[in-house]
Length: 422
Length: 77
Image 1 (tube, one colour):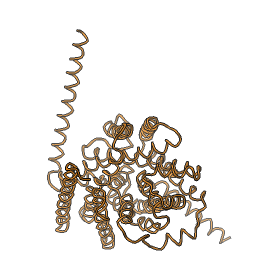
Image 2 (tube, rainbow over the protein chains, first blue to last red):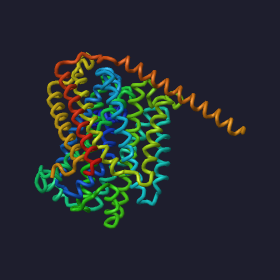
Image 3 (spheres, one colour):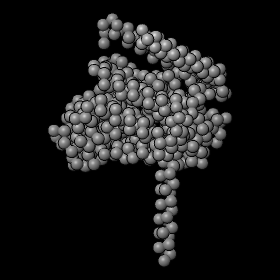
Image 4 (cartoon, rainbow over the protein chains, first blue to last red):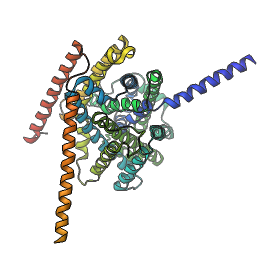
């Protein structure tokens, strides 16, 4: 009887904890899974096709890196109740504020173009014309945000996050050798030696794991969700769960392409789908659905990031808790970003490859600044009070930030000068 | 003739509206610049150094982009 009551007590406690988590989960989970956007899936697919399972260990390492960076935005948002753009203006003045805001809006818009490239490529497998894809996607994205409740948007978006896990059944369908995965992927190794090509892939994977929009998005989402200081531990759990899933999805994409396309050069995720279809059409279809979902999640989050940022700085009403007529400019900005990014994909002969490369270069100009601002703000006792970075936080975060700045800079340079690293 | 007059009237209204939006935006940007004219936190020596590093880093990137542009213009890749 005693055992039964103990079991019931523990059971109810776990259920209660899960219920609280589901209530407070959102920004961390969404930002991390949306991080596996169309560009991310392309990078993982190309990495798997090129190096097989050999770089799984590297993707696993990137999970904690993403967690430590994003966790800081939870604390900053919950304590200051301001988004990252507003925090930069307020703390560092208008020069750095405008620089961050304009750079963010350019890099976000270009990234949205790449999301639309991914979505149209994915649905072209099902013979859906790009123009139909763009129109439907823009209207669905408008419908999702126009409910006038942050909660509704968040839960619908979390449903799209679940679809991102589609790469897991895709991997099981092709029966990869588990022993091969563990033998090749778990122990750190550099296939073919640390040459220029491998280094480029490592940099690309880091570049896709930490993007500037993620910092701005999560902080603004934390504010819009009205999270308070007492919710910080849950925000951290949410971010940790999200970073776990982002790694899981990345690893499974790598397993799929590492099994089916090993040794091939894949230029983009659309090309990976085309190559997979003749080998296993079910997996090809799942891959296409996953790519569409990745682009969709990325676009919706990135468009919101820009709207939030401009709303914070220009003083517009900028919350998903407002109806359209209450936050007109916020929604107009969101719609304008989406429709123009979608329209670019439909222009015949648009330089889409150049845009994809340009995203990486522009992101390099913003990412170091956003990360440095984050560290400075998190160390300011006046702003953060008892939630400021501890010594451990600083050692970890400053090391991560320095590595990211160095590697993302090298990545940007190697994009500009492809022959530089051999 | 009537159509032409209507067209001119529409252009005039449209032009006024655009002008008004531009004036409002300029005023808004000016007020944002005034509001955030100075950093509102006390910057430590480390923070000041980090901001200086960022400025130099950005200058470096701009020079790099400029060099790339120059090589493209002069027939490079």
